[in-house]
Image (cartoon, rainbow, N blue to C red; front, side, top):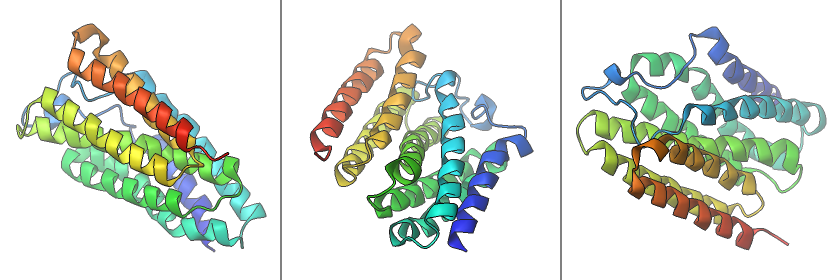
Length: 231
């Protein structure tokens, strides 16, 4: 039944953009201090990774149902993955109404996705670890972006400081997870994709601090992923 629930949750998650008006980012006027071109947010093209994540999660879930329904190494990650995908299926309607609750939910998605990734077995890398790693990696970046927008949008800190702080937070989480899950470099790859998107978004602004931090973070993640990769 858990394998069936994973397939159902993955499909509901992937269909959620089609069942709503979609999500192209928080509107500037959703915050007390409008966030126009915030430095913490990746360029729009970077969000295309969701298409890959949706399809791979569904493919992996179907493989797990048909081929690994009773496998213990698959079973260990199913409940946290189900929880993350169910939250994700409801995320877009919430985000359209409330950035605050959307931020709370996306951090819930991240925690349960990381739980699933760290619980997944060592077999079936392509069908189990890779889609979860890509999903958790992008959520690591997206959660920090959402929190950065909340901090700047409510005047807790300015947009520049929020961007720098959240990039550092994303890098810290990413480095820890990369070292704990040595056999899932796709996780680091998704975070790197997001950091490249942040660089592209800031190229025209001469935001040297953000550009240097992102570039340095990418270098550190690449080196870490290569060094901890199992033989």
